[in-house]
Structures are given as structure tokens and as C-alpha cells.
Length: 140
Length: 142
Image (cartoon, rainbow over all chains, first blue to last red; front, side, top):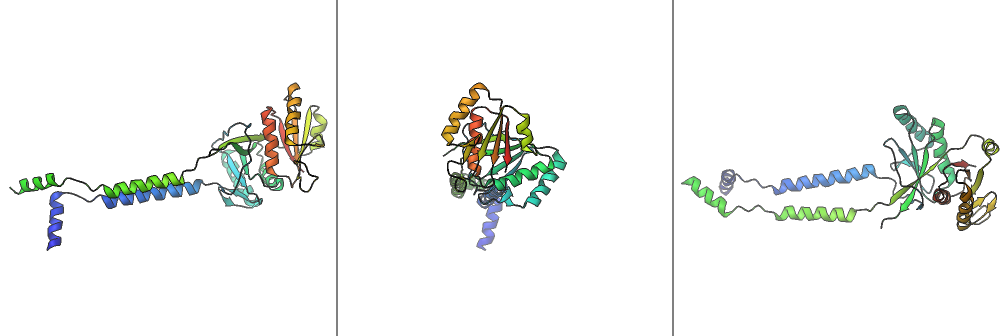
């Protein structure tokens, strides 16, 4: 009986409790923000060397960023891949965009052997615009 | 009569419960503040890939500076850099490059890297070349 009265009061007042809806909306916003960050994430283990005298980065939209970890693992957007896979990815991109710049984001402790693998792979396809990324200015 | 009563009740109780919303907004604020990462300003070091046979480049270009990047732990100490065959510290290389570029900064620079050399050393050298506005840089892997 009391329930019935409550319901009839709600419908008569015309009020709707917005709180749960707002809660869900904000939960959704948090979910989307978190997942967006994950997809854009680069390999967080990579520590770049300092290059204060070098010019600031100015990457084109088509730029391919290849990461090289301190252990020599090659990855793109944090996803590790072999040299053969890198070649396939770079070749497919080449088929779509034509010549595009390649940026190597290598850890300062990485051996040149691993960096060379990346350079050789992209050069085999015909990509000659190669750049290294370093830290110009550290933000604390 | 009934509608008057309803109107009166609405006037008496017009408040919307704001507390949960404010709670959530503060949660969001805290989340963003905690996860906020200030991104470092990045630099770009452009390099060229050398010709397949580096000796052919050396024979063609007169104004050529050769830098060697090696692993100091296994290849004779120092800071892992040598200029025209002479091992030197980064400070010394800085001074040398400063002197050399006083006359010309259009010279070709070939940076030879051994497989065991570290990326950090290469970036330091490229940074120095960038400091003296040396543009024609080739990285050759040994």
C-alpha cells in the first residue's frame, strides 16, 4: 500500500531521481578516458636520452614510431613485434601512404645492434627519413 | 483543489539531491589529478642512412668528419666516442666540433656505430652536431 502511494506521488510530482543516471554517466566517462589512454600509450619502460640542443619534434600524421627497449625488443605502441612483422607493418603502411618518416624511440641503454635492425628494415622498403627521439626538456 | 495542494508540496520540497553528484565530481577530479602526467618536451634528431659502401662516400667527399661510437666497457674505455680515430671525452668533442664548425658547418659527418655501442652515446653526439648546426649527418652501423 505504501509502495503504491509512493509511486503515485512520484508520478504526480513528475520528479525523477537523477543521481543514479549521473553516476553511470560519469562511470562511462571514466571508462572511455582510461581506455583512450591505454590505446595511445607508448612503451613506458623506455627512457630516452637528453638532447637539449636538438630541435623540437615536428612529426607528420603519417609518421611511424618504432620503439626499441633497453633489451633490444622492437615494439610499436607498446606491442612487441619481430623484425619480420615490423617489415610487414612498414610495407603495408608504405602501400597506403607512400614514403613516410620513421621515428625511432630507443632507450638510451639500447645497443646499436637493435636500432640498426629497425633502420635496416625500414631502409629495405625504401624509407630514408629516419629520426631519433630524445628529451629536449624534462617537465617535473 | 487537488492541484493547489500539489503545487504547494512542490514549492516546499524543490531541492535536488546534489551530494552524490558532487561526490562523483570530486572523485573525477582526484582521478585526473593523480593520473596527470606532465609530458617531457621531445627533440627530434634527423639522420641519413649512408650509401651501401661507406668507403665510396669517403673517397668522394673531401670535407668529411668521421666519428666512432663504441662500447667503452668492452672496447678500450673512455666515454665511447672517437673523432677521426682519436678517443675523447664528450667535453673534448664539444670543443673540437666548436672549433671545426667555426670554419664550416656544411661538412659531412659520418657517425660509425659498433653493434655494442649505446643509443645514449649516439644521441649525445647527435645533440652536439645539432648544437653546431651540422646538418649532413649519416649514421653507419658496423
